[in-house]
Length: 165
Image 1: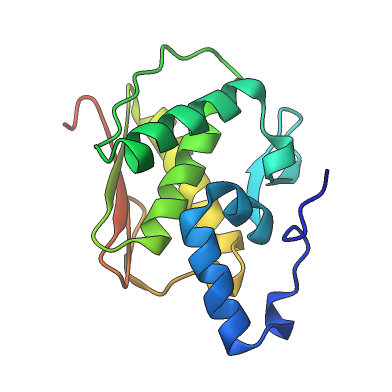
Image 2: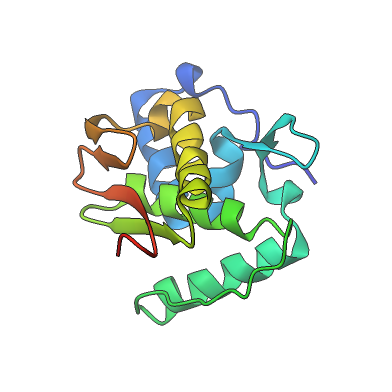
């Protein structure tokens, strides 16, 4: 079932409607997915939009556990994933990082992987989300390099490898 937020024309909204949409998206990750334009590469290498309807079962379970720990239990999220290939957990993790980073002040996310190539790939996902987001969900940056992205709300994401940390 298609979300009413999926193809919303943000430019046609009034200032009050934009403010309301930001507030709704801040509190609801799934509406954020449908209202924004998070672009991913699918298994075939095509650029496609990440939406609530496109999530896999493992991604949905991951989001639910993440939201349970972070919102309901109000504690830092600690989820260890013994990673299966092509389940989309890196994709959804980066989407959650992006959602939190743009809507909350002083949120720090750090992407760590076992090797530089993998870390670079994960960070490029986050940057692709930023680069392709609708203007309403694309805050100004104060620092933007190949290893760190800091928004004007003092939230940031950086990357490293196990050897660097």
